[in-house]
Length: 488
Image 1: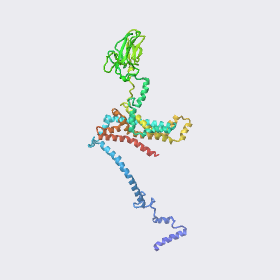
Image 2: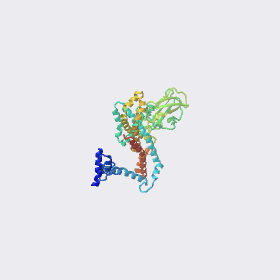
Image 3: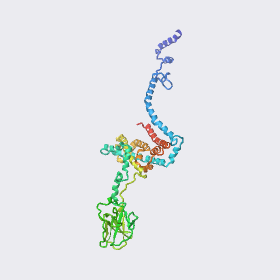
Image 4: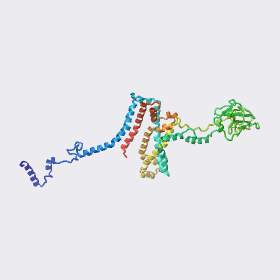
């Protein structure tokens, strides 16, 4: 006690002499630092490891373990579903792509080489490239136009509702509807029916399409698609021009019994009639019940030049007055036998891909309009008004202010549509008829046909699936990178 008490008594006396508190004296506290008990949360505490973590048996570690356990319990079902529905199919598809058509024998990269060597798959890749280059850009531009118009037109809600309505219909139903729109017959196809109305204004159809001469020794085919007499005639001659190939129900209601015109004042005259009697009749002669063909244009030609025109009456008679001399050839021009407008082959191999893209635009333009409208609604109005006050026109405001400000939204729409068109399947499969499927095929359709069509080639179909997945990855990676850079 005396050995240890002296220094303490000395310190007490020294501090008393100097007027300082031993508990607050730096020298005293330095010598007694080992007696200080640090808090568990202090980073300098010796009870924490070098990473600042609490001991394994501490209360914070227990809380942390409980949180991890709860998170694992809630995430486990989602992870299992993700592994079952995403990870395993991807692994299985890649595995099958390296095997033969039956999925049993290893073939390595042979299926991937076949993708670029087969004509069908090369056409599918080319069509996908056309889709990616055209559809997203056009849809985005249309969406921007509709979004701007939606802010200026009256009844904007009705306008936007009409544009968004196609998205409420399934793609299969939409494909069936557009296949009817594109039908080649104007009687069924809406588009060709509208075109036929305009076509018939400038080039009306004849009531006698497909009509042809009864006797080739009287009328022969002319170069323009019409017919010309094989003999020449003089004024005062009566000519008979029998035709066949006309359905009785297509003959105009104004037609009556055919009759010989007879010569009138030395005019060159004749008759054009339907030389057909059910059950028989004389060839080249006008029998009872045979109708004249009214409305047919007959031309008198001499020395290669049309010198007169005549139109047949209800009995099929015509006459050229004022002609003198001989050497006249009678001609029936091609306009007398013009077929009605047969429609444009929208579903043919040459137009099938543009036709399907138009249907795609009809569906997705409303989607683009909605997204871009939301972006336009978030623009600072004072910026737009300042541009107008400075004298900018509406076109300049759109081009130099609105579009630059809404560019991030346009990029979102573009990337989303690129991913969508890379996977396009329903419209192509439903709209394109069997005769045009090869011309309209895309990677997704080709994958389906190869895998589940006649060949049942699991290896090549899986390789096409992997290729489609690889094509989509860049667009997805771009979206993820953009979201990380701009979380808002």
